[in-house]
Image (tube, one colour):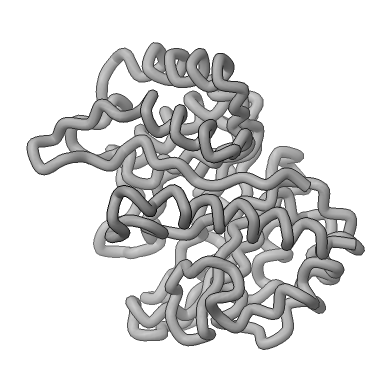
Length: 293
């Protein structure tokens, strides 16, 4: 397994400016992270380079700088929204950024990008209605991704507090596996992103989930919580049972990326001690990987 962490190229100042792409890459290299997960979730924000006709040039410049620093992009995350919402439906503006994110994923050198499933809350049969709409949505995007030598990993969900704990499609491993298996009959570039934090909101024991999904899991999102909120804490600062999970991950043959998705870890930490937080994260990741035996 390779230890990686997220980098967000689309965080902007109040005036819309953002010019720290190279600095961020240099900073991660200095901290010892040689594998990164590029987050495109907010790439549809105003002033994003993905809205311009030069977005491919932008991605090539990022790739060139990463290569110079010895950094490899191992996965990405495209923008997401509930495309099953009957009031909004599929947002073609966002979908254009999704497609451009897929193109950039290929340019950056990553094979897998992550996307969220939608939930058809307006359908009285939520699972059936959601599956139908997800098959339509992902079939279209998988076709485009395949042309760009990119695979799409569908992420496990949870009944999040932010949505009033309403039922989320693919919060269970059975639904997620069923969706991916159905898509895989036509597309070989589909897999699963296992989000340990999301899973902790649904399951007290993730080991049977890992055993059930097995080789369908292609990438991961690594973070922790106390089982109530999707807090994206650093590992061991919640109640995820890492001592059980890591050996199980190894037993199911997972050899992909072990990618931190710890949001705003040091956002409010004084500048002169921020690096200490990130070095702690790297040490934590290395320790977790040592448990995968």
